[in-house]
Image 1: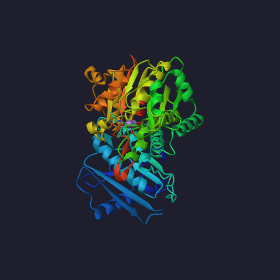
Image 2: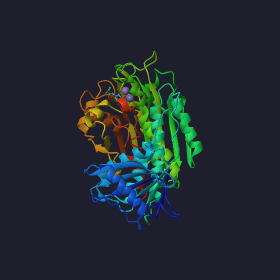
Image 3: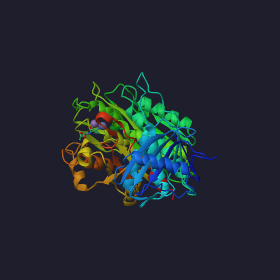
Image 4: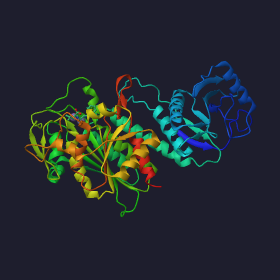
Length: 494
Ligand code: BES
Ligand code: MN
Ligand code: ZN
């Protein structure tokens, strides 16, 4: 998908004729809503005839689609009737989701959309069109790497926003880069565990580093993790034949004196639960247990593509959680890189075990802030379902920045507590702390566990167990929360 913008009005006649799919907003009086004059008579007639022949619902917004014949080249129209040209943010999103799906499904490659008179309440037109652009890329996403009969790849499409003088080029560029980051996140998430191993993730990171300016990749192997004292991380991979990898992607877009942001992703490429094995129902979905890692990849890709003037380190804790002769057993005690000992009461609470050592490792970068992203707990899905990712943070400014980015993008978060009363649930009779906190507040106690390893660095933890993938007929990775994190990073530039 390619995005551009123009100040011209849409014409069917004359030397500036526009063909392909034309998208217009229509008001209650069935007139085209546009700030771009003059209007083309042929077009007005065509719109009227579509509206006469198709019943547009009287709701807040509805779509009419038609193909027109009788023009020099085939033209189809998409008419969007809104109750007013000033839309609430939710109305705009509903419209954008639906229109972007129609555009993805259409065989026309040339799309022109007149957005010159549209206003979104509480949102700049730049943010709104960035959102629209991201949705359009998402709507065109297909994952068919493992289908022997692939549907023909959709032809590259061109979408031109007709808007007059507004300076929307950066928003379109950002939307495209974010959309492509999301596609990478979804590809990695959707790949099965026998292909997407820790080694595969390491190779993907090396490739991304080679392709991107100012991005270098380092792979820390098990021997090095051993030397660093990462007994907690290594206890998770003990039962697996696949070597674990601690992947470091280092993006330098600002001077050496600028402290980096550090992003950390849980990269369990398959979570059987280990010796505390999971029940078989839906266990296949545990291939998605690396979606936090995939989010880090998507963000790194988009940031490098945009060459943002920031320093950003992406760390991926990649391992497979398997039973086996060498596997960690319930009751085993391991020593983390921080020196804290951990009693592993349940080997299925493995995400926090790889993340705690990665959080300790992150300190070597002197980060200005750290954000970890993890499909950490089933309890998070019980608490929030699939609409919001859970946010935990020890820093008010960071928390409010992330919440705000969630509002701007619709990739929403809900803040949860980190009270010491919850941390108490992690007391162990035998070690410094246990890796589970009992049946109550499972998402909270997992976050409290991580908090024990972050020190004073501003830190946020995102539990994306409910948002990273869809179940059922539309099973697949969503690419969340790449959009929210990208918005957060962009907001830091202002
Ligand atoms: N990867 C799972 C969490 C998960 C489960 C995410 C289902 C999405 C859907 C994690 O490693 C896990 O198994 N957590 C346990 C923790 C428990 C043993 C304290 C859980 O949530 O059951
Ligand atoms: Mn688990
Ligand atoms: Zn897991």
